Structure formats: C-alpha cells, structure tokens
Length: 603
Image (cartoon, rainbow, N blue to C red):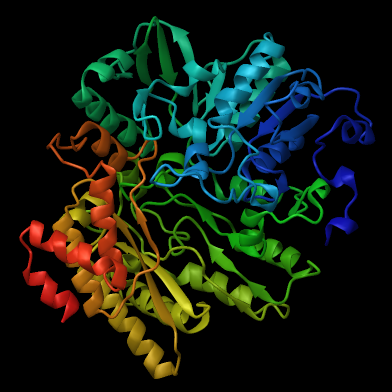
C-alpha cells in the first residue's frame, strides 16, 4: 500500500493534532529520535514505538526535533505519564556525520532528501539535556547504537579523547543497550505498576552512588584510572567484550567520580516467537506522510528487503554488530518471513524484485551450537576466528529453504542477497556430506540466482598478520572463493563481478602491507573501488587497540597509523592504477625500502 492508502492514525503520532486524531488527551511515552520517522522494522524508533503500543500504552514519536530554536519540538507533546525515550538513530551520530578524515559527509541517509543539518552531534546528550531542563521530574531512558556503544568509558575518535559513560553527559536515568524490545517492555510494565524507575532490569545500565560489589560482579578500572593508564583501558575492554558475548554474563561496575556505572547482564536470547512478534507488529512500512515528496536514502535502500535474523558470530575486530546484537543468532520463522515478503509484494511500486534476503551477515540464518551446553559456557567473541568452532552447525539448508519459498511466490521475479556473505563459512567443510553439500549448493545458487551482476564480499586485507588482528580469515580463502566464483560464472555463461571491500590504516597495518595489497590485487585484476580508511568507533577491539596501543587480550603493544600523512600514505596504494598517484607511490616505496614492488606495480 502507498502512503495515500493509509490514514494518519495508521502511523504513530508525531504532533498534537495526530494525538488528538486518536482520541487521546495525554501520552504515556514520548520517543525522540535523531532519524526521520519511517514506520518499518529496520528503524529502531519505529520498533520501540510499536512495542510500547503493543503493551496497550499511548506512545508518540518526535523525529529530528529542532534543538536550535525555542525548543517547541520538545514542548509540543507535553509531559508523558511514564518516561521520555531517546535514540540518536540507526547509526552513531558521529559516524553518520563525519568521514574517517573527520570531514562532514555530504548526505545523511536517515534524513529527508539526505540533509546533513537535521541532527546535532551526539543527539542522545543534546536531547536528554534539553528534556532534563524542561521536565526535570520525568524519567529519561536512552538507547540505540549511540548509547549502547558508549555505555562505559570509551574512546571518542572525533574529539580524540577518552569519555565516560554517556550516562554522565546525558544525565539520563536509565540506558538500554543492545536490541531494546525486551528491556523496554519490562520497564513499561514496571512503571505501570510502580512509580519508581527499576534498576534490576536486565540489559540496562544506570548510575548509582558508590556501591559494594557482589562476589559475582566484575569491577572494572575506574574512568579516572583509564585516563591515567591506557593499559587499564585495554584491560577493561577484554572484560566488556567477553561479557557481551556470554550466555550468562556478570554485572559490570565502573566507578566514575563519586558514582558507579552499573551495567546489568543482558537478557537471555530472544526466541523465534519473540522475534517474529517484533517483526509482525502493524508497521505501515512507509515514511510518515509528513515527508511526502522527499527521498529518505536509508529507506530507499531497504524498502524491498527482508531481515531474516539477528546477531553475528563473526566477531570482526572493527565491527559493532556483535557488541549490540550479540554473537548468538536468533532467526525468524519461515512463516513470519513469507508474511513480510507478501506484504512487500502488495506495495504499488513493487516490480517483483526483493533487494535483499539478508541479515548482519547474510548466511548465518538458523546457525547455532550443536551442543548448546558448550555455548552456555563459551566466552569466545567469534565462532569463526581463529578457526571455525567445531561445535558450530554450519548447515545452509534452512536458508536455502527460505530462498526457495520466497522465489516460489508468483509475485516474486527474483530475490537478491545484498547483505555481506561470509565466504569462510561457504568454504568450511565438516565431514558431514549433507552439511557440506548444503554449503556447496548455497554457493552455486547464490552466484547463479541471487546476485544482481556484482557480488560484494569483504576480505578487508591481503596480509594474514593484519587479517588476524581484524579477526578475519586468511586471504587464501578469498583466492579459493574467487576461483569458485569465476568457474561457476564461466560454466553458466554469466558475466558477473566480484567486488571486494578493503580497509587501510587498521591497527597493526604498515605501509608495506598496503603496498603488497596493491601488488596482490593487481595480480588478481582488481581495480579497487569499495575501500575505506579504518574509522575508530566506540566499543570495538580495533578502536581500543588504536587508542591504547595494546591488544586488549594479549596486552602486546601494537602501533596504528594515526596522522593524516600516515593514513594518506596507506590509502594511496588502493589507487596504484591512477596516474596521479604513481609518483607518490614510487617515492614511498623507495622510502620504505621496497623498490622490488615498483616493477611489480608498473612494469
């Protein structure tokens, strides 16, 4: 259905008039979001709004409030009965706003027409401080990526400083980390029964006066100790990451000033039924009518896509997915997935093409530990590094069944896989003929039926030493996957491209490593286009290594390219084929004593 087929009351209200259209005189919960309001399960504010609504409560959303005028957007809906909820949006606001070189991005994908001036830096802090001034007695609960990744002392790349928990600067009363449906339901139920904000809800963090630790708690180095010692910050991070990836985590305590940040352990894994419930809520799947005639780039990207599962067990060192969603996979049922696809098929501008049947990593659907008792005791941050866990069920058949069921629908001409694919999972063999055959079948069907001309994969680097620090597999596996990709394309008469992603300036990466990357990718006949400089983002092991100079697990010293000159010297090797880069590259190869690579690149 189109926006014109919906009435305003099909959306969560965003104005006083829309509240009145529902016949409400007041509200229980008011949500503030740094993103535009798109009523779709891929947009966090919509999900939390629909979850609160499903609890029988009256909820409204204020998207992208103006923080620079008389603050009327913060006053227009008045005071909620239960709490204000705040999210900066679907990305950390600083990643969203600035490039790795700290330049302003030209477009904000979560804003109408891509405008980049519709949210402040750190909206979580800005919005919360405004609301705390206007309504000092109303509880403020923060959540989303920005709050989740900044729940404890963290390095902020954009201000090149170590910052305390975002609870300090925001003055929020409670922080929800990770995927927020279960905590927000529990908070709503508690506040409906009692007037005081709960502090025993799993997957939340709060500030307390100095409190005594229980024997089962993990007491981290204080914020002040971390300011004094980078090694202390590195030691902290190992505990933080391990507890984020355990089924039975400990409570974390960190002193800051005369207070303590308390991080409660996460909820148990959602069940398939609980995840289905979240996706099956009555979303319109559309931007709010207020944006009529305007383009929201992030919505255009996911409009005809379907998310099959949550979680990622890859544990890539530079990625925040497992820190936010967890490493354990929770998958939707086939019925829920097909229900969503059928809704997409009824949209008036649907032309028969599903843009993505995917997830954080496309081919982890329904994968979990064979012996769950081992998973109960596990604290490995990755099930794939340094090698694939022998307890991991890598059967691709359930995912193939989803693809086949979607493609069997008469309205679907073709379904694509746009999410990243883990080729190390495709190449892994366990000795079980059924499971090994499913991986081979998935590889063939992916390449022949679900690629729109270009398959994107992420080897990230060619140096095994750098790849190990990234928690990525050896580049030899990419070689192997490329051979299979080329062979299948040739046998099927296809002319598809493999598009690899690479990162420069990662901790532990030297100019020599980048020079060899240039030679290796040239030999493979790639002219790279999907490349980026490493961007330190809160709560990743790569960021902590970048800032502290120590690997958090081994405490081994590791250097990182930090200056603009060092970063540009690495980045230029991606573009060895550009005439304007040649002189600088030749000069740099002579400087680092690798003149042997000049002939390999240019002769």
